[in-house]
Amino acid sequence: MLTVTEAAAEAITALTSQGEGDAGLRLAVQNADGESAQLALSVAPEPADGDSVLGADEGPKVFLEPQAAALLDDKVLDVQEDEAGGVAFAVLPQHTS
Image (cartoon, rainbow, N blue to C red; front, side):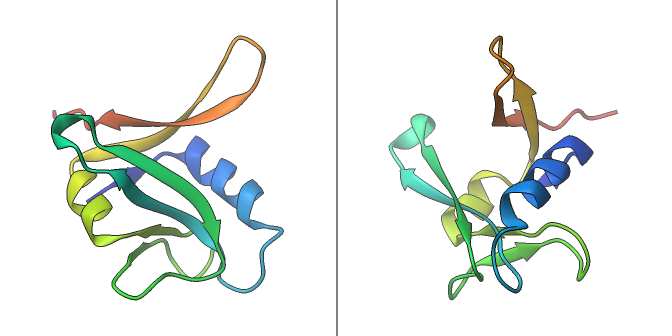
């Protein structure tokens, strides 16, 4: 299952706090072309039919469309700061102990 870092959770909260109700960050596969699948991220007011929902009642929510859930099953959602101080979401491999 996709893991969300604390930094990513804070960024999701900042993005979705303007939304109504149970808004969350939705991840969907935009271009499923083999190994180079591209993800589309958007703020959604609620999960779409079939989406998996990550997150507790309190705190940030992540909605995963079925293809994205399968693709991200063993990944970590994090945020990284660029040289200009902007923040971007990053999908990273999970570290195994």
